[in-house]
Amino acid sequence: MESIKIRKKKMLVKLRKNETSENLIKRFIRKVKKEKIIDEYRERQYYKKPSELRREEHFRRLAVIEKQKRKKKLERDE
Figure 1 (spheres, helix red, strand yellow):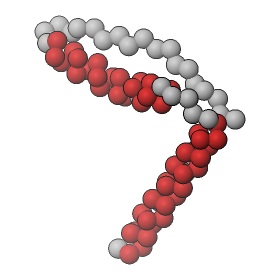
Figure 2 (cartoon, one colour):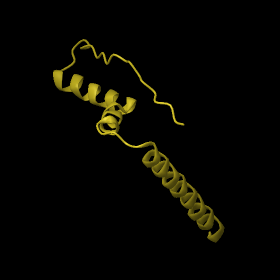
Figure 3 (cartoon, rainbow, N blue to C red):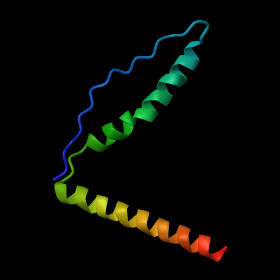
């Protein structure tokens, strides 16, 4: 069974010397994207049955395998 990771992180972005508020916001957005906070929020927004999670993971793995096969085939053709 898949365990749920709960991350408790404070997103703290302090205003640097001579930095505009626009740059501060851009830095904050980049930091949030890097930590994948919004993705995690959207994922947890609705309950997914364990069978759904397993099914999604299965198809995600299949996609990775197919991508690797295509990449190998391209390398052989060149």
